[in-house]
Length: 167
Image 1 (cartoon, rainbow, N blue to C red):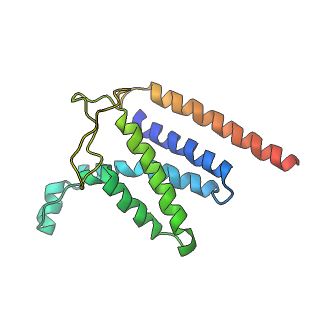
Image 2 (cartoon, rainbow, N blue to C red):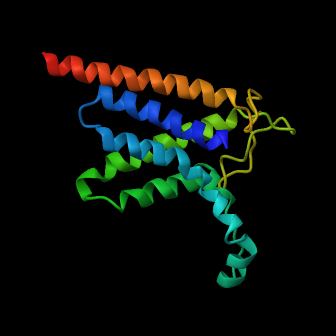
């Protein structure tokens, strides 16, 4: 599935550029941005545990859809902050949220038959912005572009690291 790989590669690029710019952001932070870039796809849990089953178990209306929106990514980002030590919480939440933002941005560029992007403001609003209409999730060219940019960033960070050691 090229869509998932594209999200991870874009997360790598963004995380690596942040790590190169800021001393506080290290290699572990790159991984956090990459994980955050995958977090909106946690909505796929509906394939294993359908919403009606959860609804019946809880006795209240339930949907997995907000996981693939701003509200769900905020919950996932805040939850990730609980998994680390207190001094790393703010950075962890920010990096996971940044990765999720790249995911939602890229998904906003997808070609949709309706001409509208997903409902990224759930559960606050059902507003759907016009879709970017740039590519299909099954297209391979966005993955190729992301892979090429990731390779350039990888080579640049390696070159930069060796150059700094020589000084």
